[in-house]
Each structure stands twice: as C-alpha cells, then as structure tokens.
Length: 327
Length: 79
Image (cartoon, each protein chain N blue to C red):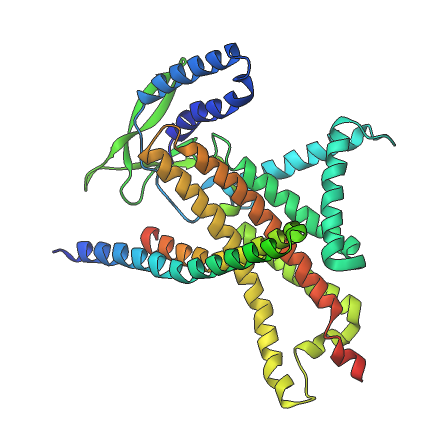
C-alpha cells in the first residue's frame, strides 16, 4: 500500500488516546495541538488508493535455500517474538502471591480455562494448551496487524498492473520515496509498495496451517479417547444409514479445514481492505470507529477459531454415545 | 468497446453481484439469530452471558457465508 497510511493513522490514533487526558483539560489541549500539527503536515502528502494484493509480497529471499520470506511470515515471526519475550518477562519473577503483570496474565488464563472447562467438561484441561495457544497467537497477530507501519511502509517495486508515480521527498532529513496520487498511463512504469509487515492472517497460508493443525489434532484426540471405535463415525456397515452418513462425516472433516481457514482469512483481509479504503476516502477521524470494529473483529475471530477447535475436539472425544453403549 | 473494457465491466459487475447476493442469506440469518437471542434474554435475563456467547458463535457461522462471498468478490476484482 503506501507510506501515507501510517502518517494518516497516527494523528487519528492520537485523538483516541486523548480521552483519559481530556479530564485535565490541559493535557487535552496538548493532544489537540499535536493532532492538528501532525494532521496539517500529513495533509501535504498525497493520498493514494492502495494496491490490494491477495498473495503476500516477498521481502527478501534466503540465499542458501531460495526460500522467499514474505511480509506475512515476518509478521508471524514478530508475533512469536512478542509472545516469547512476553512470557519470559511474565514468568521471570514468579511468586505465590502474583503481582502486576503476572496477576493480569493469571487472570486472563483463568478466564480462558474456566470457559474451556465449561464447554468441554473435565477434558477441557487437556485441550486447553492448544486452544489457548491458538487464541493468544491469533489475538496478538490480529491486533499487531492494526498498528501503524503494517501494510504501509516498505520497499518500492514495479507494479505489474497500474501502479503509481514515485516522488522523492525529504522527511526529517531522510530521503523517502512516496507514491503519488494519480495512476500512471498505459505505457509508463507504475510503482507499488511491498510492505515489510502485513498482518499474518491476511495470507491464506497462516489460517490454513492453523486449520490443518486443529483438524488433525481433533482426529488424534478422538482416537486417543475412543480408540479405533472413533472410525465407526466414518465407516459403518451396521445399517444403510451408516453407509450413507459415513462418507458425509468424512467430507465434513475436510470442509472444516476450508471453513476454518476462509473464515479467518476473509475477516482479517476484508478488515485490512476496509481500513485502507476508508483512509483513502476520508483521511481523518472516520477511520477511528473502523479501527474499533477491527479490534473487535480480531478478538472475535481469535475467539471463534479457538472455541470451534474446542467444541469439535470435545465432540470427537465424546463419540456417538448411543452407538457405543448399545453394543 | 475494447475487449479489455468488456472484461473489466464483467469483473466489476460480477464482484458487485457476488457480494450483494451473497449478503442476503447471512443478513437474514443474523437477523433471526439476533431476534432469537433478544427474546431469550427477555424471558430469562439471568442467562444473558451464556446466550450472548452462543449468539456470537451462531452469528460468526452465518457471517462466514458472507465472508466467502466477499473473498470470491475480492478474487474476481483483484486477481
């Protein structure tokens, strides 16, 4: 997309942070002045309709392997780094009486564990590590994807279709290339930005990988709980109905992978497109409620992915009940 | 009209139709879910929390269909 996005977002984010400071009056005034100044500077910059591309853009290629590292992969690594550093910080000084950060994290995990146990019963504790990992990973990855700098700052590449003109501008002593507002004509070379970072779930590969993990682990849990009886669900020669329903069950397991991955990908990708288009249409303030909406959507999608994994797992381990008891 | 223009016309129309028609079903579904949840909360206000969680899950299932339409529309438009 373009460097502009972050410049436009910052004043808007500043305005949001104003709310607690507004109580004092003076603090609010400072924020308003900053917003006006930054906004005035930003209004000098061209507003570009961002280039929307569904596949992730490669940032660099690992020389030995010929493996292209894409911006979504970098964002995934950033998320992992945040989580690893965060968990080290939280668990470094653990005490019997939790304080500060440890208290917060314990409360959060407690809420999640209680929810998992209320849905899956006593097995909830067994499913909890995977389900909570999916939730926390997706939450952090979705929310970091909304930060300014994501999907806006990057290197300039030749666009294969359309594209924009580029102008060099000196920003705080650093020469920066900015995309220009108008699109190039038929025979000129257009340029587009390959951003360094892009929210991990906007690449279909991330949701697909998580969906495959979730569905495969569900089958493993089912076999662990019921033994080979688990496969009675798919292949049953007891009656005609079983013959018909069996393959349908098998197909529904595959459909789970598709619905898991497309739900997450579609929501987060659509959110990104929505934010880009809104910021293009109205550069000021109008983005704020949509940022709030995307925060909610990010939380909801993480929650739903984890919750459905939990529900499917508990369904797989419970089995068919009546069928098992009769024989 | 050049062939490229015709393809562009078809793409824009197709993307619009895909999203518009695809949003009808989920719209009705989410409306029904919301109505059902409101009635349930009205009858049994103590169960609000549980009803809201289940309503959210149901809404996300219904909404997923619209998201598929959206993905289809985006693919038509941008690929």
